[in-house]
Length: 224
Length: 128
Image 1 (cartoon, rainbow over the protein chains, first blue to last red):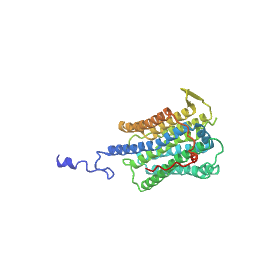
Image 2 (image 1 turned 90 degrees about the vertical axis):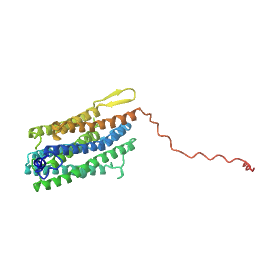
Image 3 (image 1 turned 30 degrees about the horizontal axis):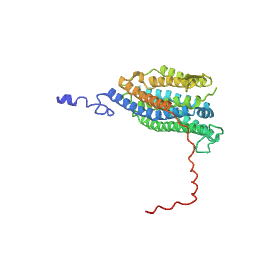
Image 4 (image 1 turned 180 degrees about the vertical axis):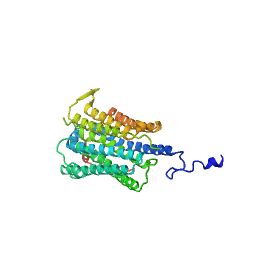
């Protein structure tokens, strides 16, 4: 290897790590890494969904009764809010692709507002409603009727799954706050927006989890 | 390197479709779609099937467009498919086990047996 060839390619943007041939390769590697993480998240939530499926199968009547006690309007509203935030997040990633700093900041801010709105609906209205209806296991849970233990089991699943999901929303909010700060300091350009792209992937995954939680918890309780 | 920039109208169309599918899944929940008898012991609740099919369509829309899987390289797609394949294994094997096993009724709680009536005359200790 000649000296010229050895030094060739060492001039690269600061954000391009040395081991990658070019920005495209680095971007694909980062995206793949994020997907591998999301696959572990699929297994994480998947185990809970499998558990839910089995107990719904074993205690079908109790789970249906439990589901009917949830107010579907809370679930539907939050589904719309979260889908909206997924859309604005996709727009933030698009602004990153195009290197539009103001676009990144604006769309990220809207996404964060929608995420806070989701949590506000969930904690302030829905869980308060559940508390007053005595539906929270361990906090004065009370349900008359023969299916009471199974209804309580349903609510254990409900609070654990939506709680874990809400925790993911809170983590996402933290990551987006960091991105916002980075964007304000001009850390991104059209060649370098990997952090935004990967946060987008995470956010859409959280949306997908909710897309399954909404019908399985709120809707399939025989509402007809 | 900007990757594939998706036009805004595509994102808008996906967004509107997702909202419409949310409305659809909510509407379907209020219809009685009935059940299908499978074998002697099992019933398939068609409302659950409809809810899961709509959720799967919504997931595909989010994955293909918002998460750019439509434009991702083959290796990334393979990783994603592998993830769902493992989920399918988890679900099918666990449910297969639950559905083919005989579940005993929970036995009655254990109660201490009544102490044996004391013998009238205690047997003499065996002294060698």
